[in-house]
Length: 309
Length: 248
Image (cartoon, rainbow over all chains, first blue to last red):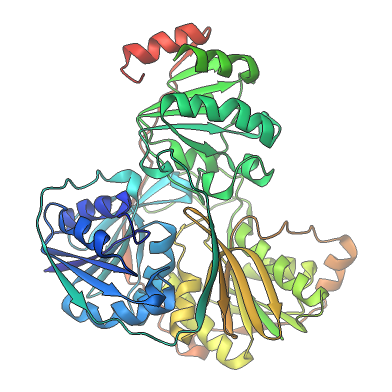
């Protein structure tokens, strides 16, 4: 058996979601190859080759792969799948965008966002915002899955796989990259951070969000998250959203500040090791999942906490 | 320009689902059902395209049981022009749904298909991408902004690090994210008008699609229960507890 793992990266760094996907692929079994498709992404291919348990890295270069456009990725990967029994992609926005196209072309029903590998044809995945766990058995000849990062540990480094260059179709394709607005930050990335500080609607404004939440996150070396309500209100950018349809996180420490705890938000963070909730409404549902709940006015409590840690 | 919007009938997003004790699924008896929230955003976007003059007709399609007609009526009340119900009592997996939609696209020849990025019941997030692949169309998934000028589709997408803008050739597939728009509530007069709008009935057989599932459900279980912890009195107690746990 052989598995192709799709690497997520920005042409400079290999994202941690890839390491987690490798761990899931190991549970599936067989030889593991990683596909790095990008532009000037040699360093990423080298990084992928260092992941323990990888047979080889396939490196595809070209303009359409700089942003891993779905139409180009489909043209690249579908023919490659002749040599593989499974495709494992991280359930990042890149993986979610690309993987179903390949599944449809191969006439395979994708298994999205798996949280466990039970056997070579059976997988567990959350449904209904994580309010139920479904175990499914696939009858398709090839398995196409996306992997929920929060459910798998990152594969360690220590390997020394070979890197092979592969030809990549150059198009033309029917989509073109125009521009990107990526927030540059020194903070850890939300889905792989050990600590996350999240703010909700109770912050009341972007100014207060930045004044209250950000210093605590900086002091803790934490990533910043937000509830959907806070993002919708413009207090925080869209990629901060934690929840069913946003990012799924499982840090060592999750601090929810002024977040009531709608089921859609809980879906994104309830696998965190320790959950702290600070909210002045003692009936807020967030307290039902919190290890430590503090009923207090966040505008007093959070600066005090920032001072104390 | 013609816009096609597929809509799905799902458990209302406010309902807390209960897993059946025999582990075969979740309990759908007497549970409030609604249009998938992402599909509402898709309908709203299509209706806005029509209102702005960019689109002439908005067609909504639903694949599901007879009751999915109510979901179509909701979309018609929001401003869609006509509906298609592809009636089936089978569980329709995203791959089968995408194949049926391909058939609908071939009959209706829309210039744009706008879908919700995921349904909040099975959370698969794949139908739009699959349809794009089956049609060999470009895709703009997780859209937060959409503009159409001279047949050129420009879409801004919510991606992990921020926002990405793509230009797509037409015809194209768009899937909606939360912040694309805020869907309207249908007014009473529009709900009344929607009752007179036509809904065509079809079956998966009309499109030659085999509904046999590729995934069989082994079991559906409750997620691991998280116990509520303790309340702390003040910040200093919180800090000392976290230190004891090694979290700080």
